Image (cartoon, rainbow, N blue to C red; front, side, top):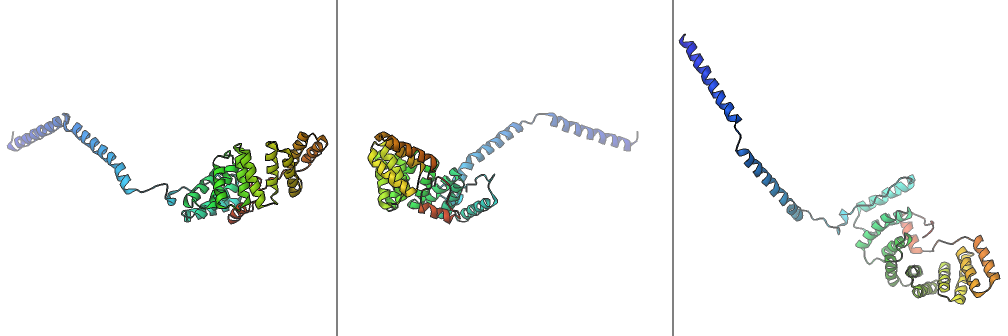
Length: 294
């Protein structure tokens, strides 16, 4: 065999030996792998523990910041195009100036008009947070709660507060009377209604409510007096006629009781409460108030 072939053979054997050693090393288990995994997991754990601390020190978000408040977005299914446009504009006004109580109040009034009571309540509460001493906002919130059935719990407390802030506004005393009646406070309801009539003698619905209250308290003669005045002021009202029929029945006057009962079937029930403060709020929201229950 020539020297050249011998050198070539030795080089090949040497290369094969090195490759064999490398393969044998790669086949052995790597003892450092578990240690590396443990260190990696520990590092991740320390990072996670630090996240809350970093958040607490770098992010200052509280419910007192109106710029962080969500703007209610009621479902628009079935809403006409004009109403949708007004709703979008009202929401945009809040987004542009969430620090203004009036923006929230106007959106709340529009939601109330569309009978989205929870959205209206949210808006009024936020407006009240921004201006806690503004009687009109308290009044609007109380009216919404009362219209959608809080059973006179919070609404009457708000109406009582407004009646002290606006003692010359007859409608708030009437609403206080309604709240007290829901709680079973008949004398309190009577006194509040008397105050409303004192401030506005032409307040027909207040006369009706006072007559009904006195009738429930057993003062039939006084009840008939106020019911008769309500009948004149409201120009015929089914609820007044029904209450008068009951009063005449209690007095033993069956003829007049029958006449009043027949009249109650001819007349309609007057629902609309004359409320300038509520009318103004609706006007500022671009609405003409005319639905029942206001």
